[in-house]
Length: 203
Image (cartoon, rainbow, N blue to C red; front, top):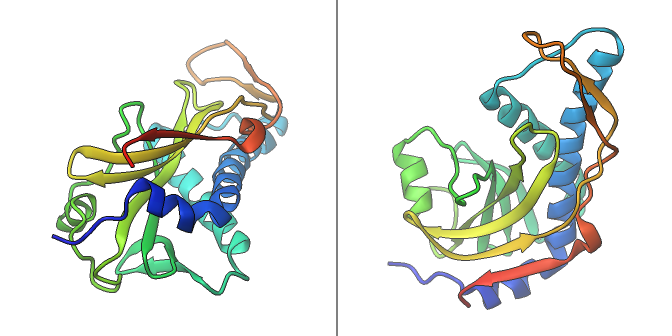
């Protein structure tokens, strides 16, 4: 089995990129809310199921990441063997997902997704690379972010995690579900407080 980087080792490599990753995820989530806001302001009340929301946000995060890392020569961004992510210094690969409260991710189970979570080599990614997940946990209404995480998994176990704690501000959106007359007001923009990194898990 390959050697996985410890949390401390990973933090040294990731430290210059934490803010870029955080802002790309926040902005992608905000872009999703802005899309809803645009349609609602024109009297079109758009609804997404959870899968559609996650897919839309993922596409917007991808776009933000491409802009954020376009001038970083030590970071490769794009698809490797159908997995989108960023490869940093040929030592860490990060894919981006919605993260559940129990730190699990929702994936269609394939051989490749199973290999990824078990740290088994993915063709095209350097063999010694530690495979990570970065993503967001939304609240139940998908109107605010509860946290942003970078996780190192081995099977169903979390080896370590880095969490970005904060508060949420959001754009004003009048959300009117098709089956309900209720309106939910979403306040200002998503912002992670003070860009502080909460360090948990083992080194």
